[in-house]
Length: 170
Image (tube, rainbow, N blue to C red; front, side, top):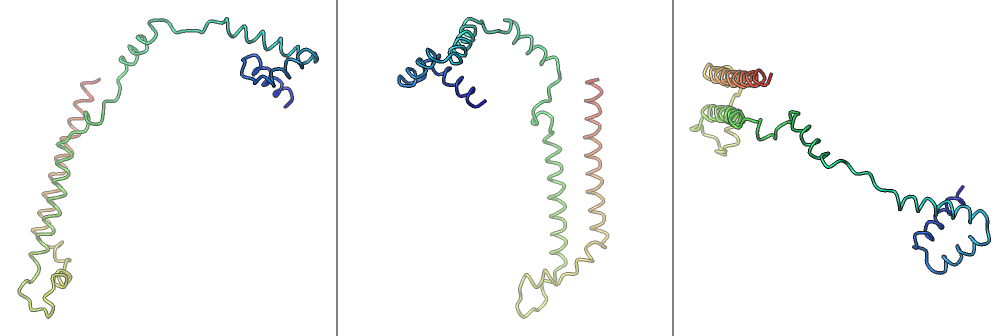
């Protein structure tokens, strides 16, 4: 089997003209002397001439236009920039920034700045705050409820816009 594959490869090199002159003379002698090599050579030579004379299939002139028209008929997903609303992203960002600033402001307001610490260190002041009070205060609860309410309103507007877009497409 390997011998047959090697024979074909050497004959193809000879037919294509890629074999060097020394190898070409060896193959020419084998074709003249060996019946197997001669039969295989004529078979490959016939195949080579068929390949050379066969015309390649080409698509019709209108093929590309037909494909592009078919693609245009389908609804292709738009680029992310088209369907992501920047106002929604900004709203979510402002919501979280406001939440963080509110918690930090409340936390710093709970620090006793006039307390006499021997080190008078900010880290000691921050760690001495009872953060459990922060979540029980009415102001913080109201602030969190307001942010949750605003977030739900934002979600409602976003979903209603999506529903309108879906109904217009259908």
